[in-house]
Image 1: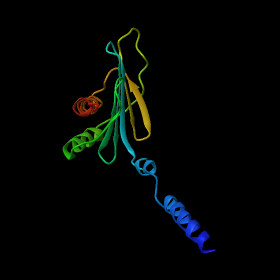
Image 2: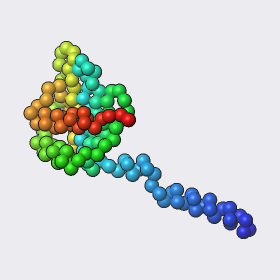
Image 3: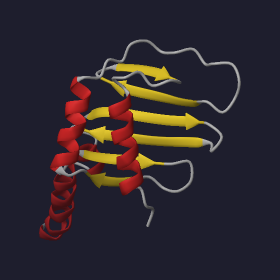
Image 4: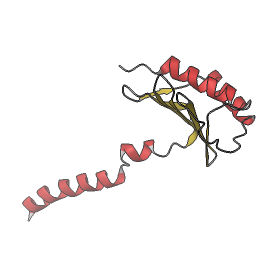
Length: 140
């Protein structure tokens, strides 16, 4: 009987600790998204994404290369939040005739809007997110 207890008890303890500890993926998924920018198309063939989380960290990806996770400085986060206060999403814009247009899609506060020309309230947000992409996206 004692042999069974010495075998079963450690197995039960290991199993219960695995249940009590949250998986790493569950912890990471609790972070909420503040804003997402997707820039695609154009002559250069852009396919860039900038996902900013509410904690100030970002996920950056481009057509080529892996996604990169970084955290913004307090100044960068503050500047972005100031620009977001003035952001007016409006309506999506129809795709223009022709080729080589860049499509900008912003997802913010539960809405997703796509534009080919940048309205005045979009420009500071898009330019700031593009600067962040240029500064921090560098695959290892």
